[in-house]
Length: 221
Image 1 (tube, one colour):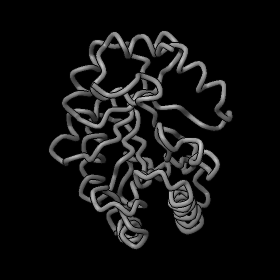
Image 2 (tube, one colour):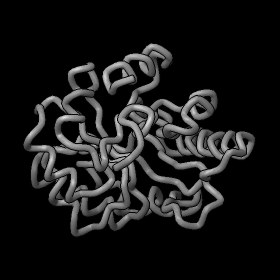
Image 3 (cartoon, helix red, strand yellow):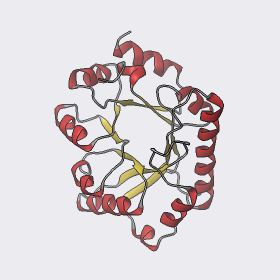
Image 4 (spheres, one colour):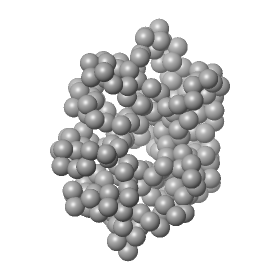
């Protein structure tokens, strides 16, 4: 099946409350346009250089999600157009996003990234580290970032029980933060979890955003 059919098939299976992000890293303009012409509007990139190289050549109504590890010195390049930064894992990055968003008179939606996998290689916060950010005096001064929820990646394994447990943990983290800090903030509603190999498990555990690459575009180049 082609990109067009893949997107339509996936979207037909998705609950209404789940948003599909097409992970377009390493994919060319033509492949992204094929997905766009199939009705896809949300695309995810994990490298700043790649995102800023593609963005000017593609339709302006594309919603760009940054899903990779973000270095503070790269924030300024994506701040003018990024629609969501899903991978905020330290206060320093949050401050930098806020600074550039303020200069552009924008409010940039962000997710806090949590380390839920058993693999050491994944980035992300612990629950106590997120408290340190949200309890920090500086956090109250942040006016140009909207914290909209949480993001995480499960361990790369065939053990569905383990994956399910890790996603369940992220849902608990979301519920805890909602109760403690965001009870009256409607925009705090997103749980971004689930990739090509495990998105059905993620949806079962409460995901509202899934990030799919290979099941849409085929194996990575």
